[in-house]
Length: 166
Image (cartoon, rainbow, N blue to C red):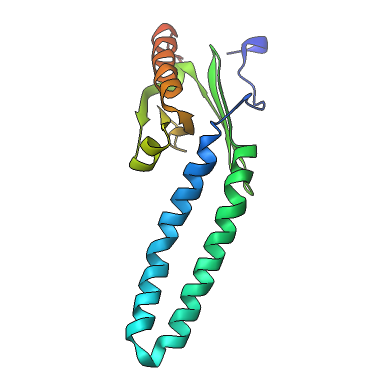
């Protein structure tokens, strides 16, 4: 691609679904519940280490609750995506933002994934795989019907786009 036809880095226009905030919160709670429970159970049964194990469980629980309260709302503000006829644009990350572009001519596969929590919130993740060494581009937190439509659209656009000879 040359001149005006070049794909340029720019902010993607679309936000993820608002339900993604609750999904991210649930994931954080589930992820941190296991270590908190393990520390609490060990603290209950190991008398000599009880105080520091219970203190550690409380600290992990407090940190998890703080992260659960603030991070998902922040992630919602910074996660963006867009699909044009030329490329897939994605911006993710809170502290370290990552902007990715996948030209249609470089897309190899398009997949949708719905884990148990995503299914609960009627969400899905679209994964766009390219030959990039950075790996696949993931657009998480999409309404499951939008994700299915997006996967169909990307498949059609990719099929209609001639390969890049470079």
